[in-house]
Image (cartoon, rainbow, N blue to C red; front, side, top):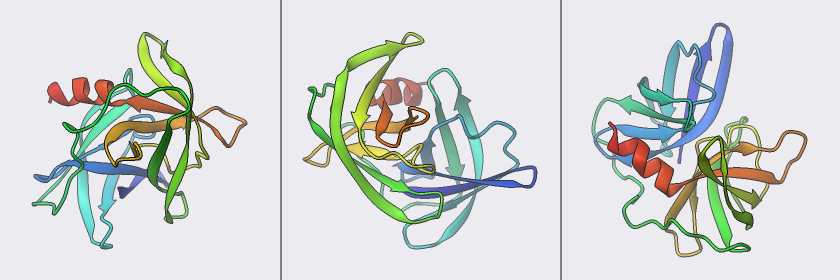
Length: 173
């Protein structure tokens, strides 16, 4: 996972993302990027890279962010999974809004359903501000989804964008 900081006016936003291509492509959610003026990606090493918004899809709530240069590693999307049974535990690697890197876990808590004609997973997992855009893995470390957010007023009802939606979005680049 990477930490992404953006500026909208005087407000600094902080959220998560992850490298999908070592040539400098980073995936995150799109809902925090309205009016974004400056983006910085902070790698796990602490290195800060200027970034630019390449593409934003509000319908799917996904964005593609670019940085200059070659990155050392990326998430294997091709080896991921699309189908998850209810109660299967998943693990999200997030940067909280304080900049702390944490791993959250919890089970898929409802069958895959459609919201606004797009599939979405519901998960019983602590989902804190800053986690939007985080990669989510199964118990074998295979990529399964992206943290979309949480149900307002709760701390543990989270929503995940399935791998299938991510793959469709990336094919359009």
